[in-house]
Image (tube, rainbow, N blue to C red; front, top):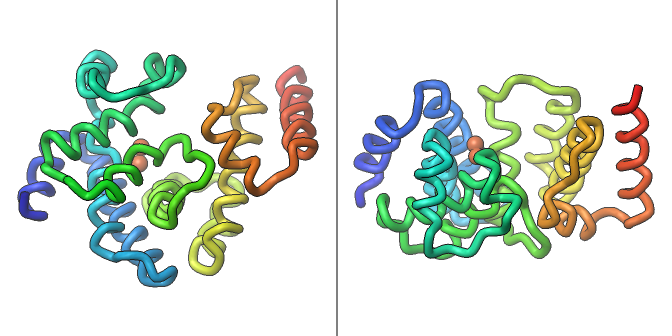
Length: 201
Ligand SMILES: [Fe+2]
Ligand SMILES: [Fe+2]
């Protein structure tokens, strides 16, 4: 499928805000790919399609992944499931065959251990694209995303852990595995404990 046709289809599948976010991720992923020597066209395509399932109902997302393995946590949570559903739709509806692009879409919500450079770029571009509502630490993360991909991943995963711990929730096991590549288990436990204490206050 031609790129323009994908854009046209996507515009109809997403709400306005999500489409603006999508174009922001596409642009940011392209820029990061140039900096870190990744394939720019793959990065742009994965950025464009990463949220292609985001505006679907849980039922429709589950239909999209009926032949694709997902875990139980994911099956109940749209904000996690749309990445696997998006991966399936990118293939079946948008005609993407490149496994690198499909995997980058698949892992953009949780991350996982042993991420590829393209997966890291999409994971991060999703968090820092220009239309994202500012959150504490975003400017520091934006700078790291232009200079050091692994430091940026480390920082983004830590932020994610702090965020969910404060809400009294658990980090998805795949995200935890991703973080364990950058951070000691002791430090991770410490952050979880601190988050729990803040949550009790
Ligand atoms: Fe997403
Ligand atoms: Fe996104």
